[in-house]
Length: 112
Length: 106
Image 1 (cartoon, chains in turn brown, yellow):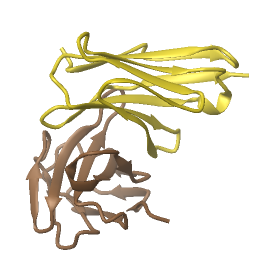
Image 2 (cartoon, each protein chain N blue to C red):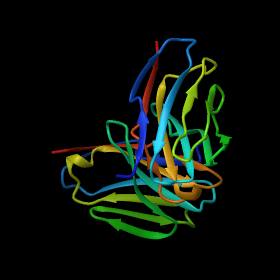
Image 3 (tube, rainbow over the protein chains, first blue to last red):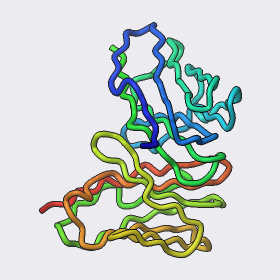
Image 4 (cartoon, each protein chain N blue to C red):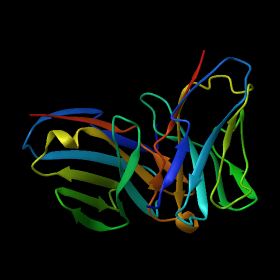
């Protein structure tokens, strides 16, 4: 079945550590997105990519980095520079940057 | 002021009731999405619409472009409809509402 797979589902990190969240899709979608969700707030865009080897900063990119070496994969690294990284992270994709949104199950990061 | 406002923030209904969730936005849009987020966190797309009305099972979504307003209706609500319902609009980027937490009691 086609879909988006995020891993890990839960992740704990000590302050000062970088962590990488995985996002893989087998939908053949061109566009992929990373969102952050905090309680009581709408999803906020961290980074997005419309094509392999290209990505753009979203509204809250500081302290995060991404890569898009393959169409299927869009990993997100939460660096130690991110001041408040504890959150729920969602990866999404759409065909050619528009259309129905497909989401992964999310990754919950907790900084201890 | 947020670009996308949803109301109500929280809604508790009795099984079988007709439910309406509202979404107002302040920017020009090319499309509007209604999404459903279950307690585990995963999000599924319910509707994408740019005009008129769409229906899928017990769910109906309407949009009024002139009034910058959309509604999501659930007929004959059921406890399994309990979830967070999120409105998102496509302008230059996608902008999300904060969501409406729906609880349907049996």
